[in-house]
Length: 250
Image 1: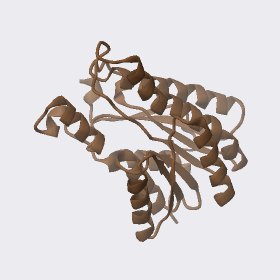
Image 2 (image 1 turned 90 degrees about the vertical axis):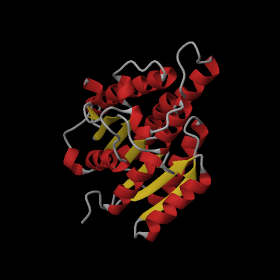
Image 3 (image 1 turned 120 degrees about the horizontal axis):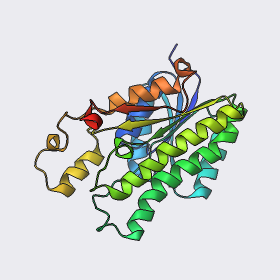
Image 4 (image 1 turned 45 degrees about the vertical axis):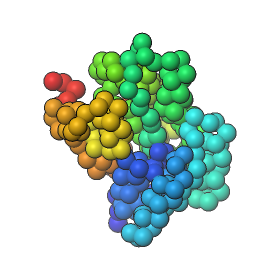
């Protein structure tokens, strides 16, 4: 039996990078996964790949900054599966810009995806997760929430909000007996399309130059997601897992 056998998991930003790796490992360990993204072609391809490998996966178009779309996604999951046990708030964007370069529009756009997206996801998933007997919310933050990254100003602000919200929601769920765990994951430099874009934006020739401790693989993060989604983490809530090979403490 898989480590999340029979569970229903929703992964936002599931078309590529960390989200796709999360969906693949959860499906491989027995979960029925719903991937959402704004990239329909990549999302459908990711879901099809999971099904071809023997997993259960569906894809839905989903802009996480849109509350109505969150309501539609949760309603569809309730209609098709009747329950929801795991929410992975993974969708994110990063723009290379300092505070002086950052427009209000860019600040709002990045926070809409990551800060608003996590807020809306948790808010609308909680009722169905309660009906399902509880579960696990896993919010993807970043080591940018711990450090000063001047070239990722708005991104850092949004990821800091994700870190703080995760703790507040975790305490809320525990105090109200929801049986829902809430934790955040804080990756460092992971080899994903987002890193490729950052390297291009910075004009670097080699993506390994972006991190003195090397690049992690998406599976390094996905393994932590699997642990937090599984019953093995039943007494872990309100904490944060840093996955960065010491980058944030050097």
